[in-house]
Amino acid sequence: MKCPKCQSENREGVKFCEDCGAKLELGCPNCGAIVPLEKKFCGECGHDLTLPSERPAADLSFDEKLDKIQRYLPGGLTEKILAQRGKIEGERKQVTVMFCDIQGFTPLSEKLDHEQVYSIMDEVFEILIHRVIDYGGTVNKMTGDGIMALFGAPIALEDAPQRAIRSALAIQREMTRFSNRLKSESGMGPIRMRIGIHCGPVVVGTLGNDLRVEFTAVGDTVNLASRMQELAEPGTTYVTEDTFKLTEGFFRFEALGERQVKGKKAPVKAYRVIAPSTRRTRFDVSAERGLTPFVGRERELELLLDGFERARAGRGQAFSIMGEAGVGKSRLLYEFRKAIANEDVTLLEGRCLSYSSGVAYHPLIDLLKSNFDIKESDEDKQISDKVKKGLRELGADEASTLPYLLELLSVRDSGIDSIPMSPEARKDRILEALKRIVLRGSEIRPLIIAIEDLHRVDKSSEEALKYWLESISGARVLLIFTYRPEFVHTWGGRSYHSQVTLNRLSNRESLAMAAHLLGTEEIENALEELVLEKTEGVPFFIEEFMRSLRDLGIIKRKDGAYCLAKDIRDVTIPGTIQDVIMARVDS
Image (cartoon, rainbow, N blue to C red; front, side, top):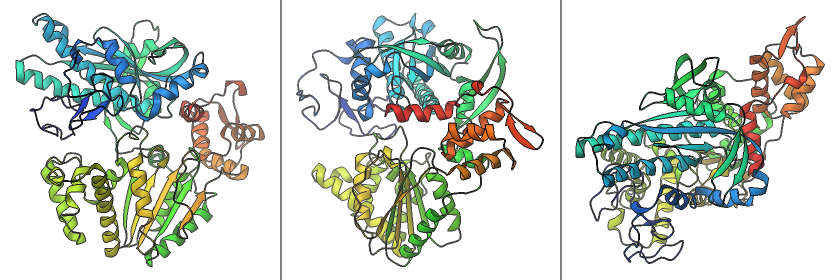
């Protein structure tokens, strides 16, 4: 059976992939939904899975496969798109376009029969489609030996350029594994992917029931993405300067200088994507550049520090910090971490990522990896040994805890399958195992658990967090959650839980921040009014807006004060802010 994650073939009867450890699942032949191996009927359409398939998946056309897969986009995206069709059609959007093209296959295909060619291309398109959808993109069309994908259309995404690059890196990794497997099985030469990415505006046109988007490009949006793909060496991903600027800090790039591209008189700067950086959030990137003075949040910081003192004394505390995008939730946590840096505590941090809401327990798996010092490169035995060692140090019962933690960490032969129990019992025991290590850990030293961006949390994690919160009143545990206003939690009403709302900065605080970013105390009135109008007291907007004004030469220093150097009509909102605003509107 083929693994849905790494595309490797596995022996009949195994439940986990023998190459990557992912759980093996079937695709319903009737509706395309993912179904666990042991199930006899599809939970989506009721189809009898014991019946022989009337039409093998290999016989489906590309369009049919695309239609089936995109009907099961994560997070109800299909319904959201179709419900907003009237608003989306004709709308101008900032999107990220990605072109993928296979290299090295055409000459090899001449030596293969039709069935072999189709089988190989079938696997390649499975890789492309799934890795695009994993990161919230949509496959828009087939382009010969590849695809064109969109991120940020039909529904806007605040981090579309990042998602496109992460998707490209995932595609390159899987294509390398696939090519190596072909070589070992049949001696075929390497098959590599060339990928090009560019960000720019488009006008959305007709939106079909299959989610295929027709649109009109504005300027060179699509052409430049295509040209980057043509420039790319096999096995690499090239991006334009616009894309580089929007993702700088999140990835490591190699500057390739100016390149001449078809259809452009002036040369275009190109960059090769090397790998992700260690920075995962906008705040991480801002901290690397240098932070502005901490203003307007002193009271909230004192609340967290008071809560920490109560938790350290054995009266568990929980804080829910709510605020809109860019208002300063991550900065508040950063200042709290600084304030307790010299305390003897265990601090574990997790994050709900924008593209991981469909992955059960994702932020909690982050916490486990951090707690047990598990690296991405660790093999199953290393992971198992580290967890066993950690449980011994905690004094936790291995028999009732270890199998469930290893299951969450996707370790093959976790031992959980040898324990007879219902799915409900399995879930309950996972929750108990997680609670057990939290409470045992807090007996050794005070424990702080901070999880950011709960508005993206998966249901399994949300249930576990609620379970933790109900259990900490007499423990040395401090829980801190951050989220945006659209998330509604169900754990209020407890004496040890506090709700903290972060509001926008006042005009005075906003202007003080803008002045610091410019390195001055003097800003002329016209510029002050522009800053207040465009940024509305949101710290992230202030930082990006001031950076943009300076980079574009829209402001200048005159007689010791900063003022506008160009007509106010030349001032546009930076792409980083546009993406956040449009994602908020679309959601």
